[in-house]
Amino acid sequence: MNTFSALLIASLAILSTLAYPDHHGHGEEDHVAPGYHYEYGVHDPHTHDAKSQHEHRDHDDVKGAYTIHDPDGTKRIVEYTSGKHDGFQAVVRREGHAQHPAHYGKDGHGHGGVGGTSYVKTTHWGHGSGR
Image (cartoon, rainbow, N blue to C red; front, side, top):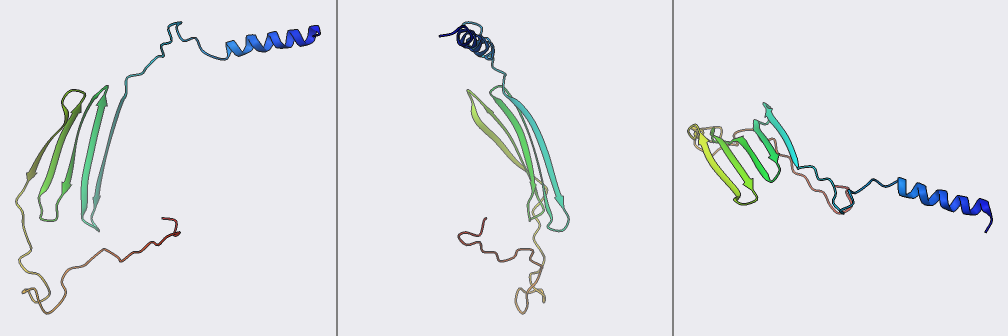
């Protein structure tokens, strides 16, 4: 082997050891404690969709809540926690009183016509439609 080849191999060996960070010599890696926070809310006057959620994680503990406005006029609130030792715990409560329409249909008796407006369309996605 000539001198140039020997220097090239030695240089590559040195560079390859410099490319990897030191692992403290114990095989341990630095770990960052998991954590996040997010929240969102929706209020759509067209579809009457109203809901919100927030959640926070610190290490193994998760806390959060979500709300949803149900069709009967009540607001459902779910507060939850989850931890390594306690598992998932939720408390559900409602605000307001359920109110149902006084009449259904055009004539007020539930027959003789269709009442209300639907925002739901018939959809069908077959195989290969990309959805």
